Image (cartoon, rainbow, N blue to C red; front, top):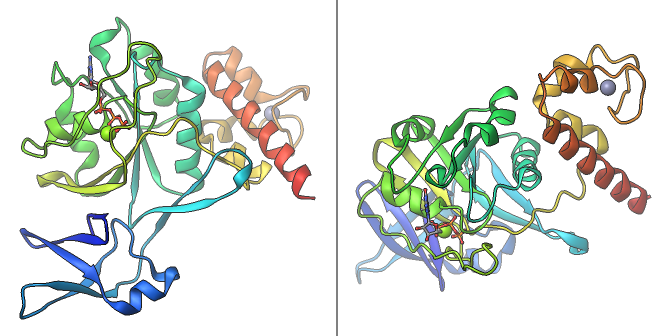
Length: 296
Ligand SMILES: Nc1nc2c(ncn2[C@@H]2O[C@H](COP(=O)(O)OP(=O)(O)OP(=O)(O)O)[C@@H](O)[C@H]2O)c(=O)[nH]1
Ligand SMILES: [Mg+2]
Ligand SMILES: [Zn+2]
């Protein structure tokens, strides 16, 4: 299922896109709500209409926690196996902490993660922004839409996967998909001059078939992502570059905060782990500890 607007579900069937509606049974059972990315059984009717009859088992469900105190969980898409966190080098400015939050959400969902630094035409050394993630072992691609920079590398990243583009609003997620697949013509927005924050141009998750690349889900940009309910211990695991060093911390249960002989802190001094990543980790751990205190 590619996208849903006003009760119409677009489903890709070979090279055809069918507009379908839900069979009554699905409408009643909220739990079986059909998600973008779901594989479904469709019945075509004599009158030309088509209905979704059955939902096939899911390999994964990507969940998003709403930020703040509301503690809501929303299912975003089904069967996604790769998250591509897209940020802009400028307009809006690169926000390492926000990018780290997106990356941690992907890790917590247990999905392969890659980072794209887009709008590289607007800065001199985008490599500096990308370095912490490359050092952490994530595939990183530096792109520019007007310059068509590194589109082949991006294609390579997507090939054979069901990917989902996530990141702040206005960073160029839809623009990248438009240049990867000419003819797609997704709506893209202008970044408002005042805030550089952009307006939401994409309003709902939509899956697209990008030729030999496979499927990509475009999502609306988010101002913030919630991480409540992530166990404090899970936070360190979401920073994969810490683990090799953490084994050498003096304390087995080192949290890489104030403890003496912390090998993660040493790795930061040696330039093996980016300072911004340790800062993000500490911030997220603090958040997780606080949330855990509230629960208990
Ligand atoms: N200079 C420059 N501008 C870009 C680039 N990519 C996208 N833009 C511009 O950035 C603006 C926002 O692009 P969108 O593709 O709508 O951004 P988005 O991430 O899909 O935004 P949401 O749908 O709101 O989440 C548009 O005006 C694009 O033309 C780039 O590589 N370089
Ligand atoms: Mg968009
Ligand atoms: Zn430590």
